[in-house]
Image 1 (cartoon, helix red, strand yellow):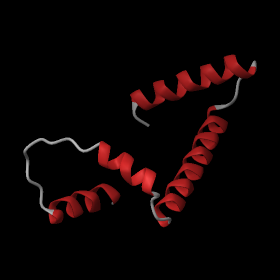
Image 2 (cartoon, one colour; image 1 turned 45 degrees about the vertical axis):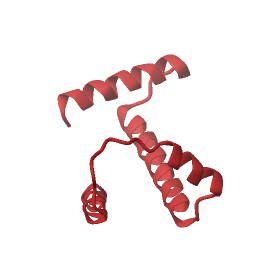
Image 3 (tube, one colour; image 1 turned 90 degrees about the horizontal axis):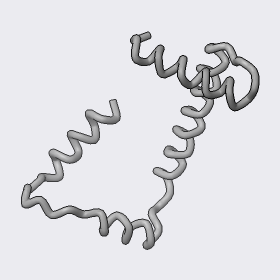
Image 4 (cartoon, one colour; image 1 turned 90 degrees about the vertical axis):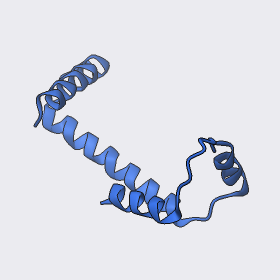
Length: 85
């Protein structure tokens, strides 16, 4: 584990201890984080399988920023494929 990650885990463990009033072992904190990550992953997967609503599409269109840079669809596909790996 990287030192920075260990510090983050220690800090989270401390915050949970204060909130719950008792100390949880780091293994329990890690298990809890993994449960959260898996639940989030399932939610994203389920969202990806359904069509977007007109409201969601309109929201995405409002996010467009005109930079003057031209991007080809193949570049976008390659970038997404690298990010998913």
